[in-house]
Image (cartoon, rainbow, N blue to C red; front, side):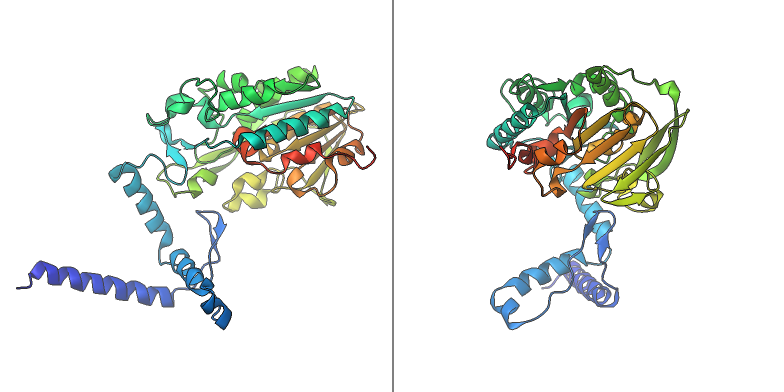
Length: 387
């Protein structure tokens, strides 16, 4: 005999399928997910080729997943269930820690890639007779260890020889470099301020305050006097920033605040980004978008040049990842010209490219996670054509 409860469940299931089937047809497709910060799959074309090779079925499966009605709600619900009911240790490689901090896992380091990077930077530095400064920024997982969950032990203690610990990774990288590379201990510089808001909770970047403390540490290698916090006007520009780590799971956490630091005594400058003059190092249009961190430098230019009224007679080249975007403005008073180069988007020989800019110093700065995954860093070691 069929139970009433079974009938009710069957009817509810049929209604659910019918309702969401209608909604799937009626609701317009979305091109972009703001919460996940990525393009969404669109309906695949039906052709003999796509059906016969199986790509249509795979494409349609991705399309159904990406365009399912109220997708953001279901993603957030799945994250909550996975975290609290199923007790999953991480969601898409992200831990959720105390005080709403999200931490990206650091593991599976390719030691061969690391060795190639060390050799590339070594060769690069030996081709210049100006200071080459190398700074690896730890990610929040290496500094906010007290906020990590209990099942993320690698960053809670030093594990000799374990490259799953960012401190060990940075130390090993630094110790393998020649004397021609000056290294900066950003781990200590940031750890001394770990009770401050130096990393975003929902994003992999440091905050502008974190960048300020890194700037002070780099100034020591430049034999330059840093400005104090009292010399800046600090302005919050957004209190609704959900970053890259949030996008990996639509986590139930509060948004971050983005701040801007301006010297109280302003310095005139002009900016050219990938050959086009732009008004400022800050782009307010991004504050109304998901990718609010692109407020700094308008995204990821291949080559950005800043000309200042500092009258120092000096030129600097920054070879960088996106951690440099909120860091670079602190250095405007020290150089007449600053070039910021992203090796990902430079096809020319990097040594020749930098040499043509006639720098007085070269600052190479990456965060540990990006560096460990980067396949473009080895471009620094390419031999110039005239060698």
